[in-house]
Image (cartoon, rainbow over all chains, first blue to last red; front, side, top):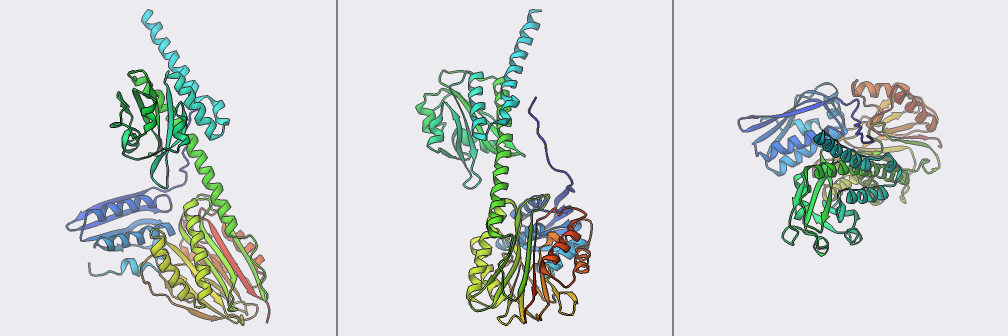
Length: 117
Length: 406
């Protein structure tokens, strides 16, 4: 049959995102690479967590291996969305490449800075 | 024996039907002709009176009549149906087949379906990557019950149509994006007295054309504006937003010679008119006497300065938040000397960012490649050195400037 579906999804490291509810707080645990293609998945998870009206949403990047500028945009959009919904928002656990990207683009303090939560 | 023959007769018929819609000869047709052919064949195979395809309009979110056989009026009149409403709207909303045994204003939105005196209609979703991109439906004037086989065949046609549509749309998208990028980013920056300038824009291997841009313009005040930026995202959408941000930056640059002020105004505009967008950027002005640069950095990787004595260093400037990130973000200027023979290199993250190494390693590698000299040679050198091992997956923009005159 001439009907064949080819998927071009080569060379993409899987992203897995899950949300743990810890009391009043939603902890979004990110593992893998956050890039242009997988960023939407993280955006959806953040959106979903915020719509559950927690007191705070925390994005845990300890297990994230890579983050590009579209990933930065997803996190910043998340913070903005959280602010509009009256939810505190904080990004934690970034290290290595991920921390460098967030530091060099000047957003790390902005995303991590809401200390004391 | 009899049963066997009947079964194989049915299987034969099924195969014939499948071949009719998966015929490789269809592949050579333009999208409109292909969809028209598919619909005509489907109508014939199912002995139906009408067959039509409505596609989801990515902008408005409605279904729009796109191709039809026996229902050409729908296409001519540009029928639009909101997702969720009526027969086709329901198919799109549920991403599942729907059969109707009674066509009336209660069950369908399209007045054309009623005018045609259709009794039974059946429709299936067109899916691509798990998303509904349209709906395919066929109708019959005589009352009839569509079978499981009919649904199966329709789904096959819908899959075929989805593939062709997606391929065509992404082709159009790519072509439009590239055309837009080309129109916005002249391959050769304007000649400016006392300056040697070179620039590059390279689409990414993985993402194609994206939202990176560079700009260089002479202002009436005698200042010279230099910009580089990166709109998050890729494809046509990012390129369109980039185009708007780029022209807005030019407009604000005409009103102020203070880069932090220009970026503050630009940020305010993005917050209001492009609330979903985020961009990083560097905007610098070279003073009228060409001896001083004032730079403001919005979430962008640090510019590289080449001092007249050949010292290569990252510009020591505070990195403020990206544009579109946060209302009323504070913005700073840094001012540096720009002596004759000094140079400035602006670049986007695609040049230095790789999955398998630290960003600072990429920047160090870039710094190591830079030597004083003609801007064009510098551009060639850094692109070769940093993009040689692997084509960048992200798009890349580079703007190199060297002061020549005294």
